[in-house]
Amino acid sequence: DMRFERTALYAAENGFNLISSTLGISRWKNMDQINASGTRAAARWDDMIYWTFNWRKQGGAARMIELSKREEFYQQEYCGCVYSLRDTNDWRQQNGRKKIERGVKFYGKAEVDCPTDSEE
Image 1 (tube, helix red, strand yellow):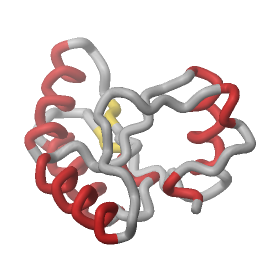
Image 2 (cartoon, rainbow, N blue to C red):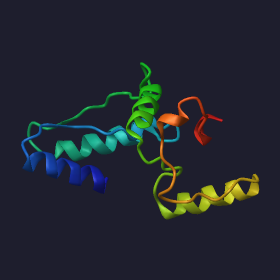
Image 3 (cartoon, one colour):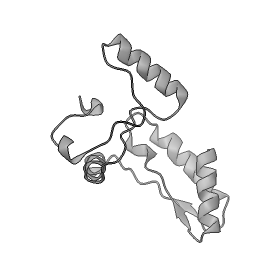
C-alpha cells in the first residue's frame, strides 16, 4: 500500500486526478489485491480515482514485451524484493539454471524472436 499512497500523494500535489499501475500485467500478481490497494490510496484524496484497467486482456502482455524490446528496457527477472531474488535463485539452481545477475539483462531489438525465461 505504501507505494500506492506515495503515488496518490504525488498525483494530488501535481494536479493529477487519476492513478493506475501496470503491476497487474504479471500473471503472478493478484489483480484484486492490486486494485484494492490502489483504490484505497486514491480514496484519501477528493476527486482522485484509481483506474482498474485489466492489462492482461486485449494483448496487453504482448504489447508490453513489444515496447520493452523496442525501448531496450531492463528485464528484471524477479519482483524486486530480496525474498523473491533469494527464492527465484534457489529455484533456478535446483533446476540447473544460472543465478540472476542484477542489472545486466535488457530486452533488446536483437531478442525479438528469442524466448525470455518467462516465455519458456
